[in-house]
Length: 381
Image (cartoon, rainbow, N blue to C red; front, side, top):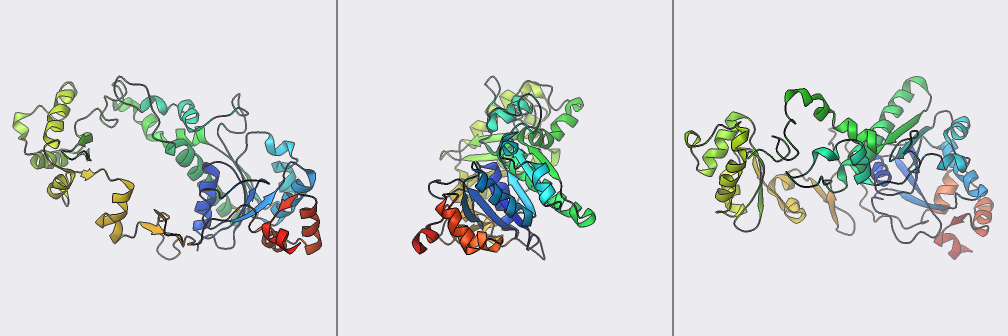
């Protein structure tokens, strides 16, 4: 795989960091997740990783992490600005130990600015980026699209891109660098299209009344007779004509497609038509056409949809739990996600420490001093 032999040390955190680490592991990186002592159960998004339980708040624990990072290619840390420096594990320290280290800092607000040291979640980062103001139905409060956009798009995925870019640059310079990846700026960057199209009039109407935010009758969802939903995205005139054909409507009897004043009434007309047939019946009408009409699938339906099955878009792990196959699909070096169960906390403590050069006596002492935890080591002792 493309990231084979890349050693990543991931400090345990919430969703964005683990997602970044999982993507790296899916594409071949050797990811060690450093968990807190006493953490309970398995972490989410831990596919393909190993777990080492370590007390970073004590100087001996910080020293262990320094030794790990001296041999690692990437450190992924998810803390607020200043936390790593308090632990004496800031970039200056670790890059002095290992000039080739890529020090990835994934935070909510970034490493500087008045919000850099305060708490937040996806909705807060989305709000500060300006993007949240654009999302929502007409006349209602803005609402976040789950916690996908800032946490995983602007956060985890953008940080993954930064790491891969830094790894590529290192092949030229031989040097590591610090990545300041944060969810506010990552989300704002994802919204570049919104910024660049402001002068085109795409967003001049109030929220929820524009062409691409649910305001247009040809770019929204409709409820079907059986309680399902169909998604419509027939923007171009030729696609819109096919939409009308499938709905059994005559263009000459309707207002112009781009008559914004008529959109509310058109949405009601379309809704009445969609409500007369089931989701399956509408699929029979629109599947295979360019009308840009698709069913809104549940997770279970997505697993079994013919298109997704033909492409093997979803996989199952060793416990037969489904999840999406890693993307994108590379032709020569595709991701081969691990089918093993996610690691339990501290499951690989001894194994990892040995690989990173710790002697058996050092490992025993660290365990005796409660710097590390390992069920296997407890059993041996």
